[in-house]
Image (cartoon, rainbow, N blue to C red):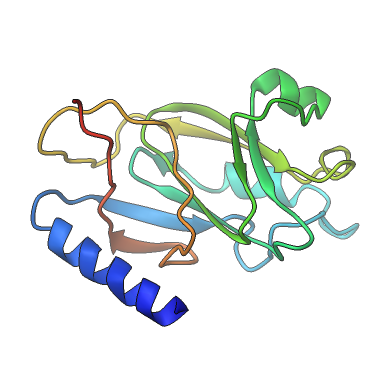
Length: 168
């Protein structure tokens, strides 16, 4: 069933790519390391990672982790600084979570597991408004979506269609 879902998703993306296109980067958070508690030899991995990547509108963050052991939540700046896991903006728990960046600003993420934020399993990224997003018509859209089966991992150039909620 997974392969049939993947084939349908690819076919849908191909058909829809005729109408609008996005040139973007998909970044695996932490690069070769899975989303998890930083090691004692690299306690600031996510801070260093964030500082070494310039993110733009149209880019995506890919979080890879065992779904039975972890999750990712998007939180406010205040919740990020205090490691408050209550009332997240977005909750992702499938182990292959993709956060699509659709607007500029600061975004804050942490593990959804108690105690891990305090152990520096958290990420703050700043997104600049000079992405190459192209749409057929203006649309109101949420800042992110988390599909069940992301198609890409690691930093690379890609053509990706962002599915936006159209105005009614």
